[in-house]
Picture (cartoon, one colour):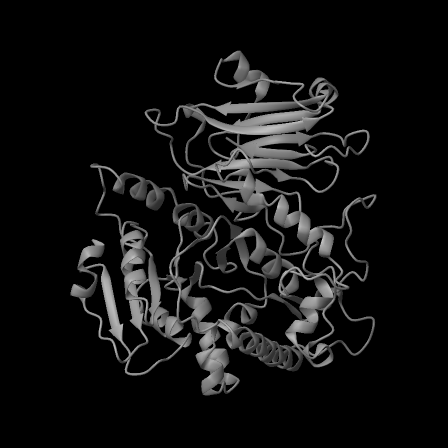
Length: 502
């Protein structure tokens, strides 16, 4: 991970290391937005972890050539173009991946510029054979992490689109294509392969959020009637997957079956402010958002904004009847924030207003805010993905807003630690003694007893981490704060548990 990322950091200046070989093929589908593809190529071709950029042209009425994208600046040796004799729709991206010579593939549509590619790739490269790593914004993340999740043994999956950016291994694509063949997918189902790909992994995708950058997008295949059509194909994919899993892993015939073959789902709905939080589900992860505009760090926290995807057991596609019914049972994002009888409306509203990405979007007007009292073991963190250049950013500042600040800061229950390797952590007292880090409280502000603590991390503590942690995708370099004991009482100030990055 460090080798590829550092090479890309250098590729933006005269010391570029052009010898670094990429291990990923970027695949872009083209229909009618040729101008958009030129913009996307100019963005993608600068990254050395992309061995090549493959443009699959689904429009037989348009012939693309290297000259078509000459102004993009993409080297001819890095650009591949295939002009399909007919419109293959979404299966084209998976066929292109199978044709690639690299072990990994990156997917995106032709109406987005995926800005935080370095941070996204860094997360993916820690466990490339793990979950599909997808990129979206805070609103769609509620769909990927809740409304489009389906848990009931042996089904434990979530659906996500890949058009706004997704990294996956070619082996995942190969298994997916073999399964569609085994299930005798029809031509229409293959054309809408996006509606099945993440489902068929049978594990939730790894969702990372940031602001999306959209390009002009007329001629949308998924616009208008396409919304209902897509939901229908997602539901068909669930029917296919459920039938396959139930045939492959039939339920136990007796209650004394070994626990290793039985997965249970808690029937108790998740709610904030429970005496003890529910244990994390097997697919929980703590890397949440990608830093913008720098694309040089990842925001981590173990504080959940939404209930775990297994909080509400999925009765099965036959009993539910349609994806829309399941969406409306859980939340209100998919139906445009129109209030109904959904279970998790309050949680989705909070997750949108105080999203993870607002901690690291560079905007002083936004913030991430915890939905509940901070508990023992809760933390927030930044992973810095490369050495920082003192010429343009001598410090990294993470603003922490605390209620009952005097009490909290004097309690000694907050630990601030910094590490250069992810294994050995240096405490705040040690850093202050060495005059290498300062933490100050500036308060009260407009709210009594509220303090803002801007923690500054100097250059010696901003080195790339090794690829090791408790979870292959979770590694934090600047853990701040971590409580040794829960706060005495819950607070209700708008500043409670907030953090933001200046």
